[in-house]
Length: 250
Ligand code: PGA
Image (cartoon, rainbow, N blue to C red):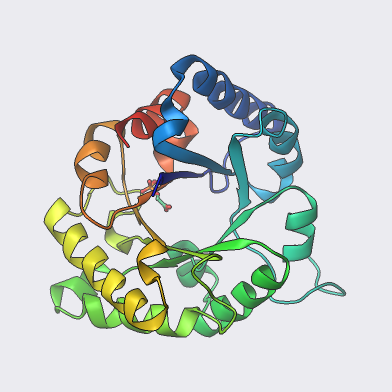
């Protein structure tokens, strides 16, 4: 299976910066020739930049577009929300759900994540469902329990081998420069794989991404770990060279 290298731009950038970054990635892919043989690239800009990025990536057709969240409702009087249908219509293929920043700053529960995922699946989007333990969870040795409960509660009955990707992102490694060791990542990805295989026929086909301070200099080691099928990249996705450096390590 090809690795999936996904850039989560979070709440960054002006229209011009989004345009430049997307153009930079498109050009780098053309120049790097061959990088897409090893991996698929996905860009997840803020909602307001989705259309701008879509216009840039769609002519080449080889860079995927996604969003960072969606509403649990289909449409209607939900001020400030964006529906999965709207994302699909705007050219998205993927949506990130349950990112730890949404779980902590917006108090999103796994139940809410599963409701959002259901709507996303109905709209034809693939959901990147994020799970991951805090530093305290790991210190007390309950990281697997936490990840398992997030997995079990965040996946709706509409989840299938075709429409989900799991992103394991230890909360303490996000944006901190601390990265989980390849051994820790391997143990958790193996655990997640076992659970997915127990739950789905062909669960081995579901991609499991690692996220948390992935950079060009640690990407090779992390992406070589069994059951690490790609990366969800925050900070390093805002720089073309770093993002492409990770892609070429895949
Ligand atoms: P980071 O973010 O690469 O900046 O640690 C990863 C993420 O939050 O998806």
